[in-house]
Amino acid sequence: MRLLRRDPWSLEGITPPWGELKSIYQQFREGILDPLPDEAGVAKKSGLSWVGGAMDGVFGHHVRAENKQTRIFEIVSAVQSLQQKATTEALRKLYELLFDEPIVNCIDSVLEQLTNKSSSINESRLLAIGRYFATRAGHREVVKFGLALMGVFGTRNDTEIMETLGKSDEFALFGAVGLARLSNYPERALWDLARNVKGWGRIQIVERLKDTSDREIQNWMLREGFQNEIMHEYLACICARTGRLHEVLHQKQVDAQLLDGAAGIISALVPGGGPAEGIDDYDHAAEACENYLNIVWTRSDLSLKHFLAVAKLRIFLSEPDGWEKRYCSGWMELGRQTMQSLSSDIIRREDWRRRIESALGNADEGEFYEGDEAAQVLSMDTWSIHFLRVKTAPLTSQSWYRLMQQTDENRIDQVLAFAESILPFGEIETGPSDELGLGPSFRAHATLDWLLQDLKRFPGRGWRLIRAGLSSPVVRNRNMAIRALAAWPLETWTGEMHSFVRDVYDIEPQERVRKSLEKLLAGGSSEGDDF
View 1: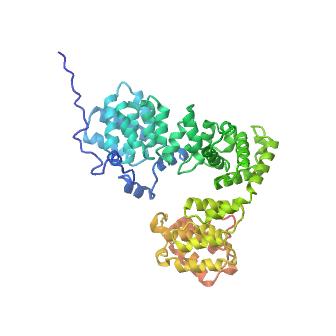
View 2: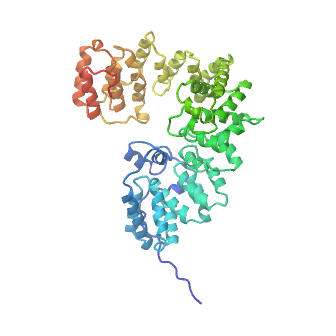
View 3: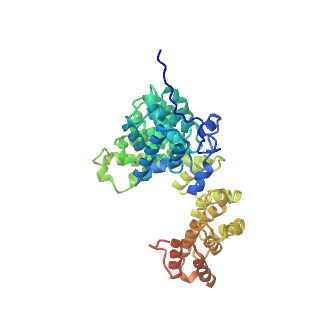
């Protein structure tokens, strides 16, 4: 009888290189998705607190990695060394290549090289490395690498691990890739995962469903799949195209949820020129918009989201540029004129004002800001409403922006008097530094930002706030104070202002800010200057 020889290679018994840091997988199994065990380290290194999946989303959508070949080679070599001999040193070397930098931009190349070296790899050992990292590591990039290995070498026994970790936006992409390979119904597996996440994870998964012919998934994409906590623009065109928005809006029966989804998609498509595809990238945009307007025109008692969608569409239709090209790709001049007329008729309905006033009195923040956005379309004065809101919560209210936007010469002194009475100047004026000014401890500095950005319209008014901005440790405060002061005519400057700007110039630690202060002292204008 021939006995099978047991592989002596094992990661068990090796001291984990992440020390006492708790396993992310174990934390998720306990129902705790946030914060991740390595959150403090990531925030300290980057100076920022990232939402789940944000680094991968930013790197994957906006940053092209360069000079990454060295890292790819080092990771592949470290994996090969570890799979040949399981030692503490080999494990630590691979771990150190992974934990400190996002893996998303090089993982495909690493996996490709590993699978191409079929004669020199041991798939069972690579799977063991993947499971070890995915289930035990406390650093997110190490867990992602583990999931990536499992996605290539795993079995159906590994789906529970992928599903558990994939419930978080941080790991949804890596869990989705593996589940799509291992599942009998990959699109359904991705869809299940997409419904559990709302941020970058949803964006990354829905992008992988762009070719689905599953009608149930298509319907979900039109109704809610495009919605995410980052930007609806990332998924609006994909969902409109995949769900065939133009066709479903031509049906005799269009339910309220579908019509609401259409409003959200069209609102996201119309601005265009953003980080994702816009209305000009959707081949059937003209038909979809016309069908949408035809439905809305016949219905009453619609929510303000439809008012806002129609308002955006009306602006788009009235813009002079781009139509020559559009008339060659599905749009028609007569159809455009008809849609302009329909949208104007809808916007002019009298009952919108009543709904806007109701929303402005709503305690729900989402309802309030939807009402405020609609009020802007009709040029309704909401200054008093926003002033009341900032008085209620002066250092946390988001109403400062709209308050200052509607403040004029007759109102500015009232706003400044209140601002000077509530701002903790001692907390703000700690001297120039390199602070980004993010987080709860910088609420006062954020409030100062809202005020500073509009003071350029009021020469000679608000020097106390500008002075605070120039003395702030937050770079953004100082830049905004300089821009405001640069817009003031020199004849409005006092001797104190000249003297103070010279003093802060002498102690300014940031070179770019020093150059702006130098221009300011030389009498530079804000027009065309990079202040």
